[in-house]
Length: 56
Image (tube, rainbow, N blue to C red; front, side, top):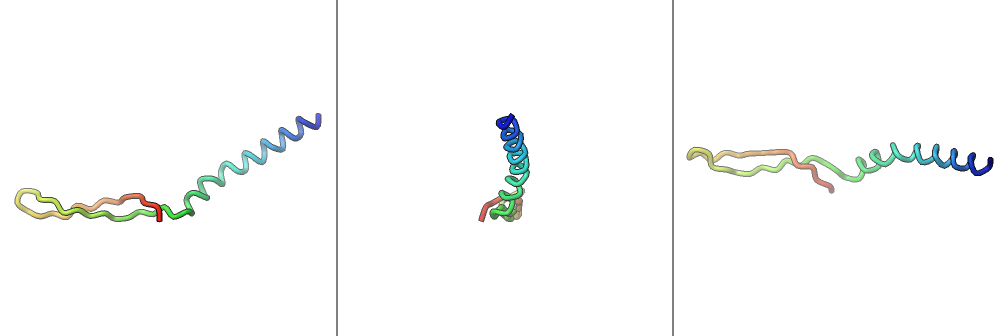
């Protein structure tokens, strides 16, 4: 009986820790960075920009 109670308590603790993991990862410096590149399109120089996810 004691081992069942311990397993149940461990399951509750493990379930509580799982949602905290993504929130912790979100705090560790992932940001969007705008990266621009100049390309030629039909004899015109055009600036093409996009968002890139970076960690810093």
